[in-house]
Image (cartoon, rainbow, N blue to C red; front, side, top):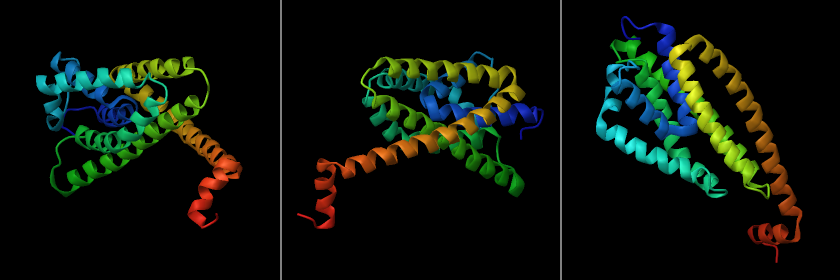
Length: 216
């Protein structure tokens, strides 16, 4: 942890960046850089690059692209599948660097632990989001998709505000969110398993899977 920085605020920053990256990675980087540039957010030296205009500009463009892609039914699930390989590693890196520069073995261990926890938080958030969108896309109407997307935008903005203003409150809400996310992932996994079983038992599914088991 950086000298002179409230440990609770540092933990909230690390966990908050990881959590929000699972929902809106590019928006998080854009807002963090913008707030730091305006003097409303103190970033550790390892994350000072987020204040660079080039990083802010690229992140802003990608955030806009993601906001549009996230509101297109079915394409949003495809987008989430691609982002699996980006959000989770990025969330782990942001969480590790938010703790501060590694100093000696203890500092390096702290960064590694923060990265592991951050990656886990990002993964939980991302898979809960992706699973929810997949369930929504199975419904015949697009309204719930748009509502979910705008809801996620609002959650990220509200979460980042709480992270900066009320870090203790944010960490409490984050613990509740992760608990609910874990339950949601379990439910979505069960639903997906049920759909696959029904498809396999259908004539079309039986023929499809029969090809892989040598049945004519």
